Structure formats: C-alpha cells, structure tokens
Length: 296
Image (cartoon, one colour):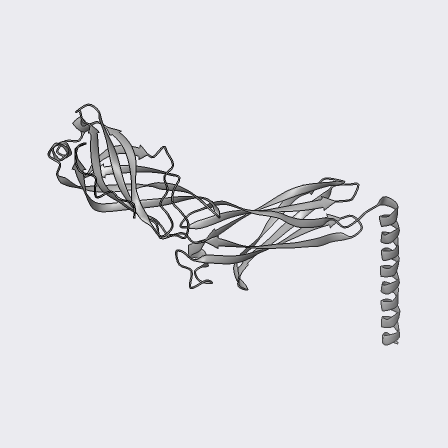
C-alpha cells in the first residue's frame, strides 16, 4: 500500500512539473522571454609591478527580454596550467537593462607572493599563462536563476625589480643658494621588455635629503641591457652642512635613493619601484670627463 501511495505521489509531482513547464513555455512565447548571452569582450591589465597585477575582465551581457534582469552573483576563477590561483564571488552585481547590452566589469588582483604556494617556480622574468573563468548568475522570470559561463586566456609577466645606482652627480651651476646638477643613474634592465618612459627619485647624501628629481623626457634602456640615464636636479647646498664641503672638494660620498620607473610594456603600463642604500658616488664639476657614462 505504501509503495502504491509513493508511486501516486511521484506521478502527481511529475504532472505538476510538466504543467509548470508547459505554462512557462506559453508565458515565454506570449511575453517574449529569452535566455541572455554573455561574452568576454576584453581583459585589461590595469596596473602591474613587481608585487602584483590588477586586471579587469569586460563581459558583454545581452538581455533580449522586455524587463530588466538582476545580476545576482559573479563567480570568478583564475587558474594557470590547471592550478587555481584565486577565486571568489562578487555579490549583487547590478542589473542588465531590458532589450539591451551591458559591459559588466569584473576586477581581479593577482598578488605574486600569495600564489607562490601554487606556482612554486614563479620568479622574476617568469611569464604566467592564465585562464580567467567567470560565471554570471542572472535571475530570469519563469526560468529562475541561470548561469552564463565565459572564459579567456592570456599571459602576465613577473617583472624584475630594476637595479639603479647613482654613478655620479655632475654640478652644472654651483652656488650656495641654488645649484643645478645632473644625476647620472646607472640602470640594469634584466627584463624581456625595454625600460623606460620616465623616472623619479629622492636622493640623500649622507643623512641629508638633497631633494627630488624627475626625468621629463623619455629615455630607453633596451631589454637585457644597461645604461646611464641623466636626471636634472636643483637643490640648496647652504642647507647641507658638512656635505657641502664634499661637493666643493669633489669627494666620494655615501648616498641613499628611492624612486619609481614608469614603463610601457607589451602587457601595459608598469610602475616599478627601486631603492638603494649604502651606495657611494662621486661629485664632479661640469668640465670633468664623462667617458664612464656609456650605454651598453
């Protein structure tokens, strides 16, 4: 008896499902409901440096229906050679307008240190192949929640931090109140792309901060190459105490320096920081020989 009741119950549920499906199809035909579509329009590398890469995935979603469709959640996954790097969920991602298309932007961040546990061989100069998988969950009347999966593949570099040394400071015009000079920066580029567009730095001689400098014109150090970049600077020696006498006598003096190099690469723009402590540099007059400043 129990088995017979069970069979009747299952049969009733099947009839209900068939009825709801048939009603849904009739409503769909009458009102014109349809399944939205999604496609990856582009993947942008917004910023990249020696620590992390920030990406944005543009997903074009088309809604053929006469009413707006809520975008419930966005699930995302980045993997490399089948190994998961990061994953997550973006809730309440907005609404897709009726009879229209929307570009949904999915922001992602890859922190190199965080993914070393997965990619043990990640090192500077590595090129990481990746695949982005995005699932958009939309709420469709009659159908309920449906998932629109999309994916895109590409590559991200892990750049080398540039090695920068202050080879010398060449005095162009000296006075106690204001001195103009040129910083001769030796840059070693171990990357597979050219450096640089511009450089900015802050310099200390001994314990004295002599100021900030910025290269206004574009300069280039070729891939796997090295060279000297000349950066103008203006400062007030009268404020420097004993460092002033090192300048006048042309002595070798200790220095520290930190700054950034702005780079255009095939992967997009990068801001690459550098830092140098405990260096030794020379202070030269305008008529001194410059034979040591050669791009190699």
